[in-house]
Picture 1 (cartoon, rainbow, N blue to C red):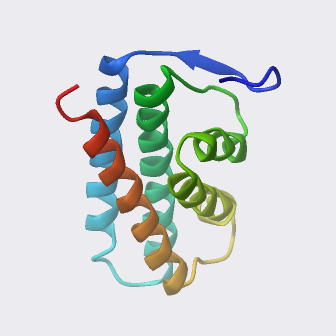
Picture 2: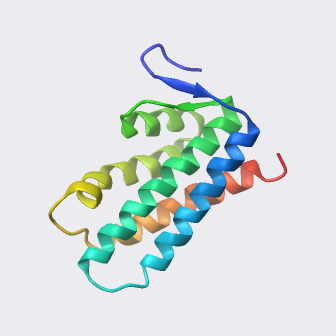
Length: 135
């Protein structure tokens, strides 16, 4: 499954469930932060959604192929997931594109981007929950 240029880490169903639980908590925190007003809150929401998406993507990969991307390039993590689940890989890629402004930027994330980030994170966490429940 792993191309030679991608660093991965093996893991089993237990690790997948742990990553799923972490993803769900990040999403819960993101949804709570989404009740706050103001442009700075948008950055916080999107930043948390990125973390939820990464953890959920890890859970999906671990459940499907027994490994997850382990490098520093989150775009590569999305590409790895896209080979397993194209729709969820696109969701993670969308979140990763928002990461620099949300985590490191000096500008503010727009309301529409916050909405898209929440939608993508929810889809990833829901998929991870469906695929890891009972495993």
